[in-house]
Length: 328
Length: 188
Image 1 (cartoon, rainbow over the protein chains, first blue to last red):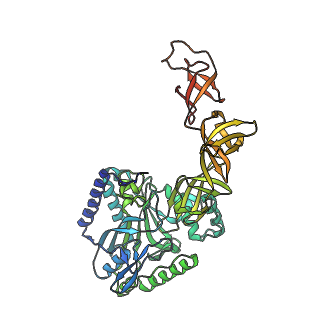
Image 2 (image 1 turned 135 degrees about the vertical axis):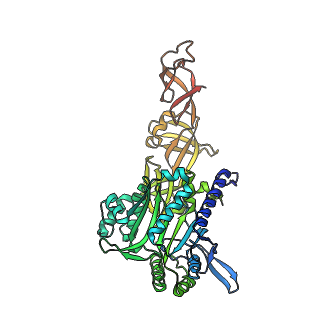
């Protein structure tokens, strides 16, 4: 069989991609946000239980060391913030093992930016403005208005249950039925993740740009937590942006407390051990930077390939990448 | 058999599910922003032909199914079983049940080569070639001169299949038929 050497995106698509990346740079230049480039490799990696990091061994002045391919440029960018960079953005190559599909590629381009002093609401506005800029006036106007959707409401409307208070066994049964798999041993978040992915996500972003807020506190990752003003429940101070059933961006009111961050890393690694997953080296330099003081503010990571896919009306991220993983 | 993890699932891979051999039709990786990943998988049950949609936790695995497709020539039927022979020169024969033949039963012709799917060395399905040439054994008499006009009539072929044919076709003629759509293509 002949070896398929050709790009997964057409040359015409790659020209359009280059123009869209140019539009992103202009957008941030006009807003006084500095473009930065941080390493793809780091001494620490993401401990997130549901992200699989790739690592390699390299000869460095310290000898043979294990270095981690970054799942997002977050840790390095936060160290720049702590060093007084002010607002920064990056189009960063990021790596997540095992993630291949029409919406995923092991190596992909993350657009990530940080806004010291911004509230989550300000960052939501800016994220949606960026998305409309890249989509262009035609697709951008069709995308419809910004709609704020609370995580809890989505579950109440779509599934008739309250994700915070529903009985775990009832939740497992529903997730198992809807997904067609055995969820009897699954945790609360595992069940919610499944229902979110299979039932709720596909319905989002069809009548407007849907911004989901007030996630369960257990899904905070590197976001702060706050009490829901309505009922006092702890929720995560983060948002996700959906358009046309596609998750585009994930934003946080950033955790800046070094001790809390250290505790969450340890919790993650403990959960990894319990699940038989490999532990990930904790980024000691990030913890030191947080201890030295990172300005409060918000940050967001956006899947650039997906946004380009939507802007150009393509069916998969592979069609907007020069060489997708199966063909790299 | 080896087992395959969800990230090895790709179209055509044969795996065991609920005791039946299945072929993967489609595998979509789904993952919420910060949560656990799943694979939404469509599989065709190779025994019933039905398509199942299942969700797996990413990283789960299924056992491979010992399924092979072999070229075999149709020989004859004894009324209970339909007999096929491998075309690799081994003259090895396989007896196929009516259930495994399915719709292919109406496209059987001696000496034609079919694809026989074996699971643990038992035939579970038979696929006819895309095009086959068969004789018309029964149809209304042809209309002379009517070679271009539309209009069609049923014709029974030597294998038992009934297809719509143009009005000018006569009994005894050999026709080329598309077995996937069951449609007349041309005179052979």
